[in-house]
Image 1 (cartoon, rainbow, N blue to C red):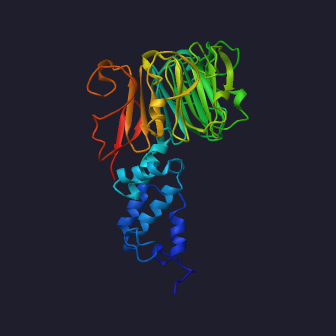
Image 2 (image 1 turned 90 degrees about the horizontal axis):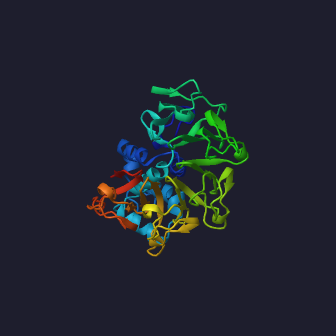
Length: 391
C-alpha cells in the first residue's frame, strides 16, 4: 500500500500516471537516458508498454517523437528513414529532432539558455533571456546609445519591454530582436529602411519597437545586408528594407520602409524557419520545401542559374527527390541545408573549398555533402559549420 501522505518515489506511481508524466514533453532525450541509468523500472519493459519496446524509456521516447512537430510533418518513408538512420533507437531520433528544433533558437546549456550571432565588427549574445553586445557600435548596432563607439567586453542591452529576449539576428550595420511576448525590436542603420521604422533615414541607437508589427506575435528574425525578414508564430513572413534584387519577395524591386507580409507565400505550407544572405532570402516550410528569392549571384538561390527571383521559388533539386529540408543557413556566397535524415547539402561559390566537396568548383544546385562521415552520425545544425551528434 502506498503512503500517499508522505513522499512518493517514481517507482511507486501508477504506470499510466508515470507514462503520462514522462511523455509530457518537458524532458529531453538526455534526461530520458539519465532516467534509464538510474533504476531498473526505466531500463526494463515490465509489461507496462507494448513488447516491441525494450524499456519504458524507449516507449516514452517514441511517444515524444510521434508528437513532435518536425516528425509529424514527415512522410511515412521519411519517418522510416530517419528511424533507420538512428539505428532503430527512439532516444536518438528524439535527440535529433530536439537538436534541430533548437538550432534556430535558444540552446539549452549547463550555463542556461543561450544564442550567439555576429555582425561584421560586433557580437550579440543571449544569456538567460538577457542580451549582451560587444564590438563596434557603428550606426548604433550595439543598442548602447550614441555616446558609445565600441565595447571591448560584453555589455547588457536594455529594452523598453520587460519581456525576455528569445531570438536575435545581426547584419553589418543593424540588428533585430524577438521578445518572449512576440514583440520585435530593431536598432542600427535605418538608411535603407531595414529597421522597419518607416521613412526615418537615421541611425537607431537603442532598440526600438517596430510599431508596424506590434499586433502580431513573432518567433524569429533574419537580418540581411540592408533588409530584414520577420517570421510569425503562425508561419507567415514579413519583410522590409532594400529590395533591389527582389529579396523582400513581393514580386517587385520596390523598397519597403515598414514590414509588409509576403503574400506570395500565402496558401502554401506554413514557414518554420528563415535565413537571410546579403541580398537573398531563404524560407523553409513545414512540408519540407525550401523557397528562395532575391539575388541569384553565386547560385545561392539553388536554381542552377544566377537570375534574380522577385518572388518565392521552390528549390526543385529537393522537391524532385522528395527531400524534406528542416533547416538552412545563408552565407555571403554559399548556402548550407539540413534534411530530415541528418544529411547536409551545400551549394554556391566553392572558393577555398567552402562547400566541403574536396574542390573549389561552384555548385549551381544543392549537392549532398559526402566528405563528412554521416553514415553513422546525423548533422543537427547548419550555420556554415556542421554539428554532429551520436547517442
